[in-house]
Length: 411
Image 1 (tube, rainbow, N blue to C red):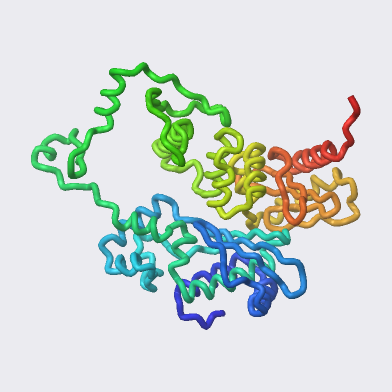
Image 2 (image 1 turned 60 degrees about the horizontal axis):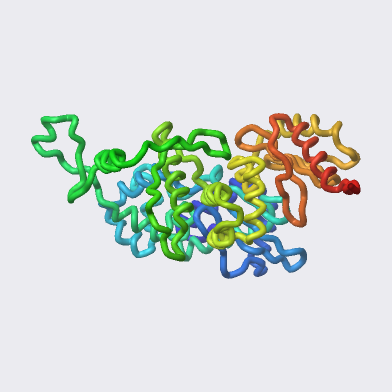
């Protein structure tokens, strides 16, 4: 695979090899790829690429490779560096010039992901595995033919890139009067109404709003204002209630940005689950699942996961990553006395400890907590809230499974 001349394909191939960290797995994936086990069409979206991998001998498995998307700050730094660049027109035509592999041309933002920014998940529950390796080899070839796919995976679709590169620069040289008055901020060209003036006009004719409380996390939400006299918008426009909810969410994100310059969630799937979970049951869940390229039942499971463990639970469900082997061994030792059948050894890999007899898996999240999963078909599902102690998480899994299988007592 290293015979390609594309710097983007080479950069991805290097990150893929380092993240997989197993020459044997890479070789098995290469054989699977060459045998036609990867379909011609790969499902790509910002932050991930997936496909149903079909070995000649064995069950098909859906493999997914996650790639960290560029943060909003990185996107704007990239756009600022490229607006006046000679590469701008090529980008707008869907090309990705090789020169941009050098961060010196992209505002210091590396476009190619590092190994630490690559994650693997697979139906076979062994990722990184031959299925994810085969998908990774296929992606190398796709990037050789279509380097611009990398921009989509890094969170910049052609439409968003076009918008960023055409965004006006609102920093205008001040007039002499403005230079003499440092309190007067620079303003964009053209007529406008200042936000504080619009608010003052409304505030003089409306009662002050009461603070709202978010029922999910108990935090006080930013104050938002609703004109009750507004009519319901015509279909298929979202309802006034939903639009008001989106305004509140935008205000909540802005509050966190102003506080510490960070977003609440940057993963599109996690953010979509969070928004949907706060809506009336069932509202827009089907269409949201479709837009995320997820089966409706898979999206409903993520909603259940969010109810149990919030955004960290979603991340731990969807992403596996290398963890401290010594920490995993200590956790396994704490779990062993609780096992119903300790004859079969526990399996430790990545950030997970699997009990193959009890069909229980404990995963260590980025937040330092332990998440209890149970096997269901060819997948794992979070079944109880996270715990600070791995033994508690394992015991919670046992208790939950026991309650599910215990026959109901007659009334």
